Length: 319
Ligand code: ADP
Image (cartoon, helix red, strand yellow):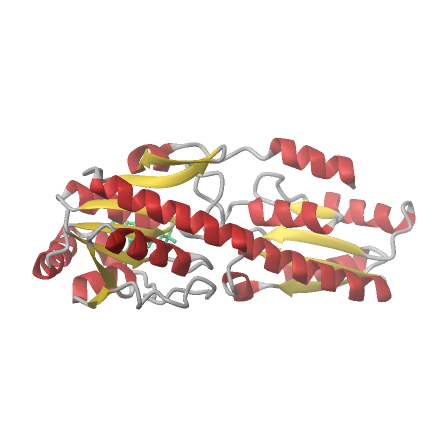
């Protein structure tokens, strides 16, 4: 392998730039040429491709977002569209590609590998929803952002006997909700794993108010579970708290990556280049019990999601 490509795909995440930098620096330092593919698979099909040098990735380690841009291209499932992408790669002499993204992006990487272009996936998503890695690039930063917001909401909620109902991202993975709940001392966490029984949650809130005499309550709820505006109105109606909904939204996707994310992205970027140099494709990189590993994408996509029963129990014992 002499020339590799790198792209970011799907939802963006802080730390993607750190991964692009690591791939570019590790590869160029061993004499490879690196090409940046802009706007994910869309740019691959359209030939939006430019060489990256060690200078082109200077000053990006601390920047959120992705300098390569990201996009979604549902048509990439179509083999004819992928053939066009491979024609572009051939035109630029790109023999292998590092794909930074979520599990959708992994599927694209696997499909390309099956067509003869070795691809390695790196887990870039704030959702931490990839089973083959204990942590994804961007999760630590997003968690920091959520906890920072929770700390602020607690201040104002206490002053007004309020219940803040806070919706966080996670794309059906409860990690951002549960970890931020543990870190911020929330009263209630609701995820797809805990389930949502509205009247039971209202009962618990009344107990915080009447029995435990709390002057505020923080409820964290994963996105895609319920309408938090409507639920907050019910909190006002049926409990002693005044309910207020906060949807954190896309602020969770931004910001300068934490040192944890920068180091993780750098380690994973190194591993991706090493795997490609060994002629490996169709794998994704993960961190498992502190060790950076390569896992076949096929296997990664079929792994059951991580159980958080132990952390959920801990949360319950801390309330
Ligand atoms: P994420 O990578 O964050 O999970 P998506 O699910 O939107 O985000 O996937 C990103 C892109 O990966 C899609 O827009 C599409 O181009 C590509 N992709 C997703 N699934 C497949 C598939 N089964 N085959 C080929 N490409 C896919």
